[in-house]
Image (cartoon, rainbow, N blue to C red; front, side, top):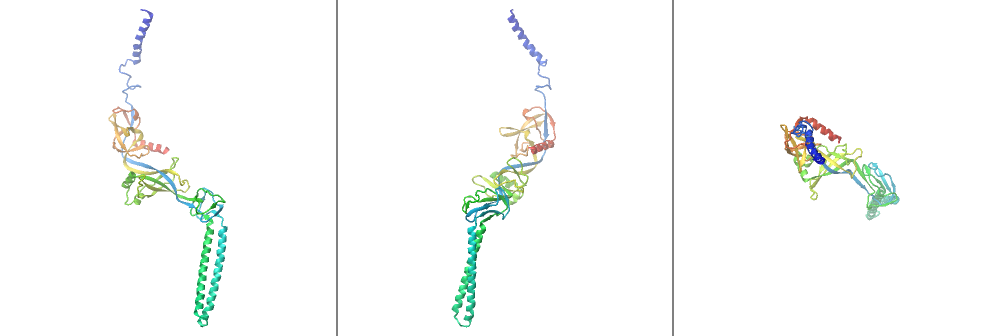
Amino acid sequence: MNKKHLLNFSMFISVPLLLASCGGGNSKGAAPGMAGDPNQVKDYKVIELAPQVAELHTDFPATIEGQQTVEIRPRVDGYIEQIYVDEGARVSKGQRLFRINGDLFEQQVRTAQANVQIARTNVSNAQLKVNQVKPLVERDIISNFELQNAQLNLQSARASLAAAQAQLKNARTNLSYSLVTSPANGVIGRIPYKVGALVNSNIPEPLTTVANVSRMYAYFSMNEKQVLDFSKSTGGSTLQAKLSKLPAVELILPDGSPYPQKGKVEAASALINTETGSSNFRATFPNPLGLLRSGSTGTLRIPASIPNAILVPQKATYEIQGKKFVYILKADSVTSAPVEINPSAAGLSYVVQSGLKAGDKIVIEGISGLREGAKIKPVVVSADSVFNSLKQEEVQR
C-alpha cells in the first residue's frame, strides 16, 4: 500500500475517534443542567392574578382656544396716529390700544357745541315771547292766536335744542371712537397696521385681537360609539348631569408633558355631525401663568376607574394574528391562553375582559422562549410589587 492510501485511511479512522472524544462518553447528549441541555428546566417568574382597581385613560386630540377672542376694528375712518401696545402684551379692560387721528371729530364736536348754544338762545327768546304775550292775552289786549303762535315757536326751539344736543352727543361719541380701548382682559394678537395707515370699519383685517386666556377651552370629539358608551356608563338623567359626574381631566402638551392644571368637561353638543360621525365636547382649564395659547393643540386625557379588574403586564402577553395570548401555569408546565383586553391600557398593563380569572398564575418574563406544554420551574413573585414597579416605570417615562 502506498503512502497516499495510508494517509487517507488514517484520516478516515481519526474522524470518528475525534467525535467520540467530544461526546464525552454520554451517548444521550449533554449532561442535565449543562448549557445546551434540551431537557433543562428553567426558572420563570409567575404571578397569581387577583382583582384590583385599574386606572384607565382615553386620549382625544384637542384644539385650544381662549375663553374670549375679540377682534378690534375701528369704528371711524382715519389715520392711525399712535399705537400704545405691542404684540403679545397683556392688557386690561379699558386700556388704550390705538389712537386714530381725531381732528375732524374734534371740529364736529366744536360745531355741535355752537349749535347747542344757538338752540338754547332760541329757546330762551321763545320763552320770553311767551311770557310777554300771555298777560296781554289774559287782559284781552291781543288775541289768543298770538299766544298760541308764541307757544308753538317755543316748542320748535326746544325741539331744535334737543336735535343739537343729539348731534353733540354723536360728535362726542365719534371722537371717543378715535381712541380704541380693550373691551376685555387678555393678550394682544398680531398688529397688521402700523402708524400712518388709513383704516376704517371695512378693513379686511382687524387692528388686532384681544384673547382672554385666563381660562382656556379644549375642544375634542367623540365618535358615535364612544358617545354611546359614555351615555350608558355615566349616571345622570340629563347630558349636563352626566358631564358633572366625569372626573377631572388632564391635558397633554405637544412636547408630551402634562399640563400642571386639571380641567373639567363642562359642555357637549347634543348632535352628531353627519359628515364626521362625531360629537363635540369642551373642557375648561385655568391658565394663570399664560402657558396655554389660542390655536395650540394637545391631547385631552379622560381617566376612568374600574374596580375588581384583572390586570396583566403588557410584557406578559404576545400577539398572533391580532389576538393577545398569555402563558398560564398548569402544574409544572405552561399552556397558552387567548385573552380579550380593554382597548385602553392601564399604564404598562392591560385590563383583561375575558380569558383569565382570579387565582390563575401566568408567566410574566421570558415568554419569547416558551412553547406550548413547556416545563418550567415557577418562581412566584408578589403581584403587588410587579404592578407597583410598572407604575413607577410609567411615571418615569
